[in-house]
Length: 434
Image: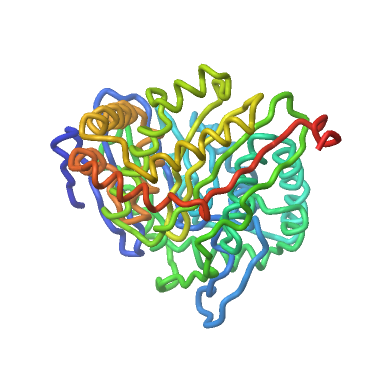
């Protein structure tokens, strides 16, 4: 077991790679009563075309299968796993994103029993065609529910506008038609390929003794047998730089229009510290341009183009990346025009200097340090960073070394009209007018 010291943050973390390839990280937090544990596989909704473990030819599985598999993992021959966690006073959950699937629990007691439950249920798959058919109805209802949520449709509508071929444009849950094609055999193929310990990470943070916990995990893993690890061969289509659609809209039962301006990223091949620096630089640039102390925000708020729903964000993973800026608004055209005008102005002449960078950097570091008081934030973000060969605790040093030129260079990867799209969710009453 190796100790990792982060003197600037006064944190000490412990790491060990198990014989089967599982990466385990333990971060004890003094003064905390709760412990949070995540068991995550580097497998998400975009991993639809790959070479199965032991094969040489690639296959394409139905959309939504990663999310479907996450649901099925909780159902076992001897009952529901949630009941086991509940019996030991733990709160358990799971989620599927574009790039990973995580299983997790939090508890203040029975830490080892809950950790054993987590490890065992994720590493003991049980699928039958009968239970798969039953789950299709449940997930079908979930898909229908999300189809009726305007904010969800706005988000995925903007992504679908941006991407022509990359599977990030496909809803994480798939469609009712796609999940209907899923079989138990599909689930086992995906499980055996992506749920190998060498493709997974266990993170423990909170009230924990690192030596005892690592020994417990080591013993649990030593009792299990797994196939020899192999590099996972994922396949993704070539994605053009230009957005798939420059504008699209959807009519729904909303009182006020909802708008997103999307910016498709050029640079999506970075990993490690380069990726962290690039991502943080774009986040800082967006804060300067669209943050609540920006000229844009002051004007947009005063003129009523935005309300409390206003937000902007930047997402970056290997293979795709995008920024979204938007709000509920009674004046969608004015908001869209103002966002595009602001982007054009920054493209033509970078208006920010050292004092501007210092201000937003200080804010970003403050947010990060406050977030380190949340065991949930640490566990989820650490895993996401690790899967991209980054270290969460390097964020502050990287931010401290950031220059104005770094922000300007990073912003260039999301500028340009060919990379811009607009997606709007409009009230149904406007459909007849248009």
